[in-house]
Image 1 (cartoon, one colour):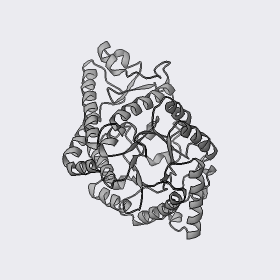
Image 2 (cartoon, rainbow, N blue to C red):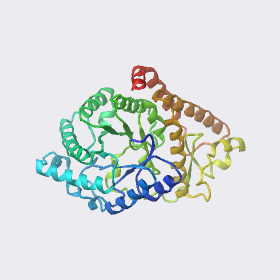
Image 3 (tube, rainbow, N blue to C red):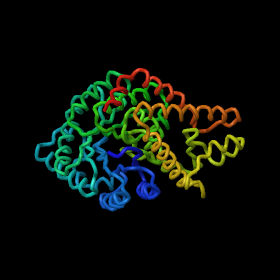
Length: 390
């Protein structure tokens, strides 16, 4: 697995990712069958590979009964049924599922197989058994194609509520004979994960997976990808849409009918704030010295509109993460994140002192992330030392 930022697909991601890769931004692509038909996935996969990117496809069985037109175009569509039905698959049906997975991954020339899995829940041994069965079907594909097989480890809200349930779920997941981990952590519906205890728990879980000495791809990382390499991840999935900034099952459910945000003004992602600011409505109110610090340059700042803002966000986050990922080890990556967040907190103070209140509450998580990373470095020193020996 290549180290760095991976483009996490959502709606209308295919051309955005292509343009970023053409500009040397990102090391890999995570395809989403929810958002891209099988024929288009194959077409774009060839273009991404030609630009030197690695590629995987997330089978997205998180809500296994969910389907749409794009998902129906894949050879595995008949297995998008309720989890209780999946649990009853016969050996012949599992073999057929494997053939479908093989066709898909061969079709896009995947560099690794992401095993389908439903979300892990506390006190659900049936889900553990089902995920083991699905992993077995994927493992045979990886062995046949000669590529690694990653186990999908998505920890649901009932798991992430307490340290003990996280540890139990991780013990169950890491019992799988995987070559690496496709890891996601379900947070609440907040725009950016902000609760200190949940953020710390996510980092601890990621660190535990990294200490298996196998690569970790942190899926749906979004802005929190700043912390990914500090807990030992090899890659972090970055997408333009807010529903890609942390894992949420709502992406695989009925639409809320709210569309893409209506007439909401474009948000400018500032590396210095490590958050968004409305541009130009809020940036124009800042003193020039503060404004100059806030406005991170990119190739996408002119002309300015919401789609340019999406491209800018991906460019800025991926560029920053590339620098963090280049550090010597996880401990130094965590310290690099601390430095960025400390500077962001200082600049947020300057913004507040100028009398500008940012409407997105984008200054609500930096201190909590700082505290969480500080706790991680202090409480998990042995794990960091172990990673440094690998």
